[in-house]
Amino acid sequence: MKASSVRLACVLALPFLAACSTLDSINPFASKPLGPKVAELKPFVASAEARVLWREGIGKPGDYVLSPAVVDDSVYVVDRDGVLTRFDGGRKVWRVKVGQTVSGGVGADSRTVVVGTPKGEVLAFSAADGSPLWSARATSEVLAPPVIGDDVVVVRSGDNRLAAFELADGKRRWTFQRPSPALAIRVAAAPLIADRYVFAGFPGGKLVAVSLANGAPVWEGTVAVPKGVTELDRVADITSTPAIDGQEICAAAYQGRVACFDLGNGSLIWAREMSSSAGLAIDSRYVYVSDDKGAVHALDRNSGASIWKQDRLAQRRLTAPLVRRGLVAVADLQGVVHFLKRDDGAFAARLTTDGNPVVAPLKASAEGVVVQTQGGAIYAIEAQ
Image (cartoon, rainbow, N blue to C red):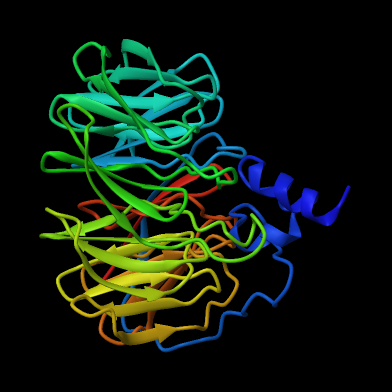
């Protein structure tokens, strides 16, 4: 097989094959990346304390990115075999078997819990006791966690379509699709609901705002412009969930840029070159980005100018940052959770989980940070 054919097959593989060296920089499951050496963790003087509040064993996610959902004091998790569990403060409230493989992580609110399957099924359960409520069907496999609004569930399917279903009974409300390039990365990132809109990143570096009421496109912003000669070089996809604060929404693209837009009309506020497949976070002062080389950046929210860069986690396949209590948390391919100071990026605390990669996004809870590992464990961690 020609090298170009191998590279093409690697991009299309699900999720990303570790054997595909040309795409190893975005393979979330590779424990030993090819190329530059993984940075060794050096001792530091801790300025915060990180501790495990509770830990529970769950089934493994396999080759899927199965994100947990946090609602108030409840944490909902699912494994590849379809075991769906609710924990309240580390106490198991209920556990049910979905009855089939699950490929899309958990979406939840105070009443409903939703997961997706490789066959495109969308399955809803009662948050109170785990009893089944309804099922619906997306247009293809569901790799991303469904997202719940006031009366609607929005699902992103593997063919890069968005579908909205009525929360009460699963009836389809609308479907949205935009043209995609011939070559695209398969994405496990959830869309985002804010106000009257659904926001999602698409192949080709496009961030799209869609009406929550009817699925009509409202605006489209360019995060990245595909460049290069080969199809692989021109992959510039948004593979993570956008981040919103106030009237500003930001997104990052693989082999592209980080860009922030006005929430209402999509006008570009600023953009800068930076490749990120993991994603970003935003607070009142900064935009935080985990880049594809393993560095964490803090960028000025108004201009995109660099504030600080923490580059001592090189090649450790970091998750997107999560900002909690003045600290910026990221986790890595060895199951280590790192806490950085928000103001200068210095290491503040560090905690090791079960030694397995963390590829699902970290989630904030009232207690602290919720971490799900590929080894089949869920942790609630506090750092302060």
